[in-house]
Image (cartoon, rainbow, N blue to C red; front, side):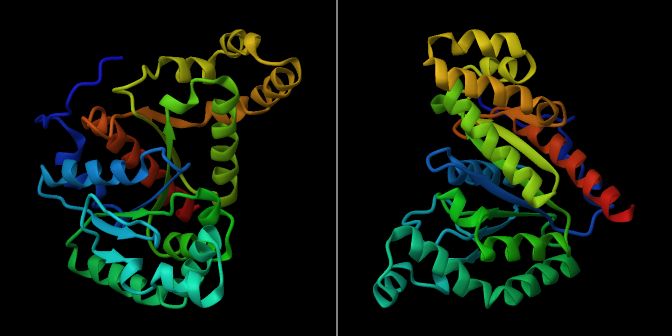
Length: 280
């Protein structure tokens, strides 16, 4: 797939602000993904992409251990919680310090919700993007992560964006590990869910799409794996068939901005699903 630089176009969905007028703003995007999948780069490109249309998102950084940010967040956990100090004070390792930092920040989360409420009243931003820690399990399986997610979803339309690294998932076993994690997050959060196949400028995303929708093609790719792992992975692929059928999936490049217009079309659909789910 050719991944060229994304450029503004007159029929681009993101130009039409009416797409979001039916929703209580801002629509919140919780960005998750394995370490190295390109979450922060994705958020940075998303920010610059929206700014082309004078619709800068409200950016929230929840990674206390991030040293350098390629964008300037509106709210930054690092302003409230000092990660290195938490490690020192509690005698914790890197992951333990991230969990504890999130726990400490949760005690102030009402302030973040108040700020988002102000955004809603002023209608200054119609999209908020939450950039989560690189260690995905620290956020998704912690009490603080659950509190943050449920707090957002109880007040604003909230969508989970799972960023998957195409370059690292060319092995069928690694691919299946990613899909299993995505599936677990989907069923844990019970929120509209979009899988972003990142780095399509480096690796053609066709293989991933085929593996999701063609069981035989996936099985052929497993032939070079050990018998135990291939049998286990084959069984899991059958189990995930229903998950694949309902999955919203879009290949993008966080480097060139390719396909971000398609991503935002999926955001429109997902936000509408959220609203319908609330009204049911």
